[in-house]
Length: 65
Figure 1 (spheres, rainbow, N blue to C red):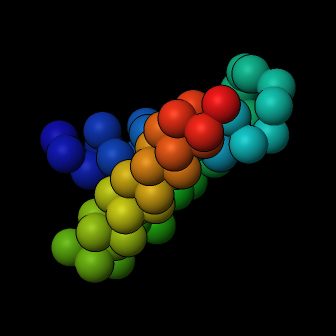
Figure 2 (figure 1 turned 180 degrees about the horizontal axis):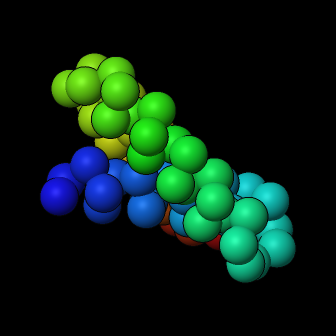
């Protein structure tokens, strides 16, 4: 269950970077989920780290303004 949440967040971050909403982020999130699951616990840590870094950068950028 945690893996699905992380993969959904990774898909959302990929979609935000792209700038357009829709199926592309969902599809890339689905593919990322498969890759993260095959990597096991390391994949979960890497995916969670990616999402945490993006959230940290976004928060830091909001505080600067």
